[in-house]
Image (cartoon, rainbow, N blue to C red):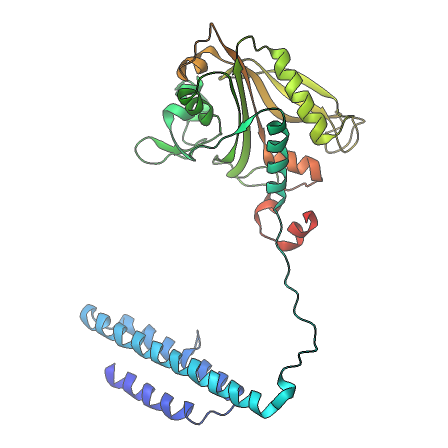
Amino acid sequence: MKQKLLQIEKEFECEISKVSSIEQLEEIRVKYLGRKEGLITIVFKDLAKLGADEKAQSGKLINELKQKITQAFEHKAIQVSGKTSAKAGKAAIDVSLPGIKRELGHAHPLTIVFDEICGLFVEMGFRVVEGPEIETEYYNFEALNIPLEHPSREAFDTFYLENKFLLRSHTSPVQVRFMEESRPPVQIVVPGRVYRPDATDASHSYMFHQIEGLLIDKGITFAHLKGVLTVFAKKLFGEKTKMRFRPHFFPFTEPSAEMDVSCIICSGKGCSVCKQSGWLEILGSGMVHPNVLKAGGINSKVYSGFAFGMGVERIAMLKYGIDDIRLFFENDTRFVRQFS
């Protein structure tokens, strides 16, 4: 192998010394460094035929030769380019030509919706807080009044890690963490990524984004919850937006309700997007369960509060008329440019 490498090096030095153009340089580069048929690539493949000790020694020699050839190419490219420019004279650079315009970046549609939603709640006095994406079973389930037998605690519904850690399945754990460190009044929104082992399709993704809200103080009622969410929906979707609350069940709130808004596509008349119902579900909400307040170290006999949570992708899809959640994560600039 060593003799073979010396022969390749000798041939390379002879050939590159005769190069006088970029085209010739490229031909030699392909011959020696080509990914499929390059001589260096071929000798790398030959390593599989060697013993362990010889393989390690030969691999080192091959890497040294590859680095040496690469440096020689870079040096020769500078020489050849310099000669070409010198021959071209002053015509090589035309300073009168316009410059190359660089495309400016801009916010992703999810970032736009994130900022808009959080901004609306900040205007109403809420504070934005964040928390860890790797959580414990206690904060993700037990502190939120989710019992051991609840289906969401099964392995097919949660990404479990080692030592009872997991990827959080919602941003609600941050509510308990914040309550443990703060005393009422509490008024926060919690944006962030969450993870669930869902099969990816037009409306599901194993990773998506949520924004949770929590308000705790003395004398808080469901009427306060409806008032805050009504202001939020009208500012986000328009003053003509109508709301309705449907009774639902969530372990961490009681009573609980899902909130619908009049379809922003058909203005409530009925279309394929709202399945002819005239309504679109956008979030879940309810009064914070006493057991959750207790887990956060707050006396439920003195304080009460409400919580709500929404999927950012769903809001963005409704807001912009997007019919496939996968478009958000494919990094297709044709899609992203529409929101600049």
